[in-house]
Length: 503
Ligand code: AMP
Image (cartoon, rainbow, N blue to C red; front, side):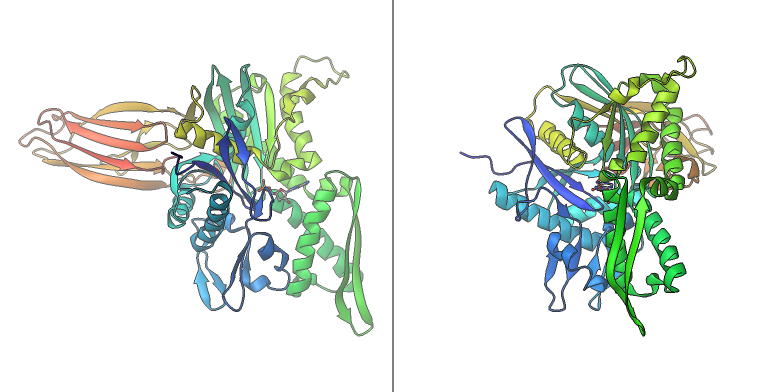
């Protein structure tokens, strides 16, 4: 007899997507049909209707940019439509195509069915973005066991197989998102202590800074605006990203695009030098935003920076040297508060752990959690925290908080409620979550998001405030919220289950 299905972890990345599973008790990346460990999150549809996903779609993007979609993750849960060959596609539609491709490749490689998955999402994905991701997975034929926050996944991957305790700061900077997690690993148990980040900061901001610089330089040299020429601009986008990557390992790079445009006097080539100092200057604003987000995360979770004993850098964009410098300096400034002036110490350089691969850590962490669910990694426990306030609506339309942001789960909390009118024979239990939707935590406009509601009959003929109604919020290990209510006098009860919405 052979097991028919295998649980997998999927990192559905802005730029690249990866799949992993547990093999011989360890997480392993599943290569795609080209033998590559990651697949570009790019979809392209040819005029004849043929759908290309991954490297094939990416390589022809320059010639077929109108019918190619990349960075779809940044549009998940948003009202965005892509018009491809006279047909409208939503971000969910595009994500389905990517997920189907990943599923099919993994099924071929493992020669088995893939259904149950743990899919990673940025910690600061809001309810709509999570629901959209889950919907795409389900429509691609996958069952989502849990949407796991990306930096948590990276920390899982680091802590896995470590014997000693660790107190981890994970900074995960991808193409379009920054996720920060504080996590403890102790006695084979992972506990998330704090989360933060932004859905508008990532490696794309660095590319954009280079693009804007080149546009300006080229305009002043040749009075030509490259952004007005679609194909030329697309080439610049690719070369800007390449230049950024060059500057992760070199002090200077050249952005060279021959024949970028043709004028009466002949062809014009783009040839602009960029050194690390200049690049660091160009990305100053984004670096400041990264710093602010990390500081906010410590502040909001009430954890001191001295607490950190290991730093994990995940996501391709943490390879930018200035990002590492910023992360180091935030922790170092705090930890070195007693250091004598003029004696800089490098004690914290060692806090950055380099024994994980930033491109694969998130996916491997998803594979580990899939393995915990599958039962192929015994003894290991995982304890997550809520990233939003949860509560019920009161008679004034305000939210009564039942589970504050940052609360560890699994847990169960009960609060006592009552009626506001005489002879009231029914109450509405309206479950709410705070609507911290986009960007920096500080930008949150405290809009409430409805997660669901139900009516509960209460014993009649009671005065206002007399009935005793217990409302219980329970979040299980997978993050599924159940809200139940019971009128203690009549015994009437009701409940609602909200699946993977509240994290
Ligand atoms: P991810 O979503 O984790 O794959 O991160 C993708 C982002 O990392 C993109 O913005 C990439 O351009 C960026 N990236 C990948 N490799 C490097 C590198 N060597 N140096 C700087 N940025 C990189």
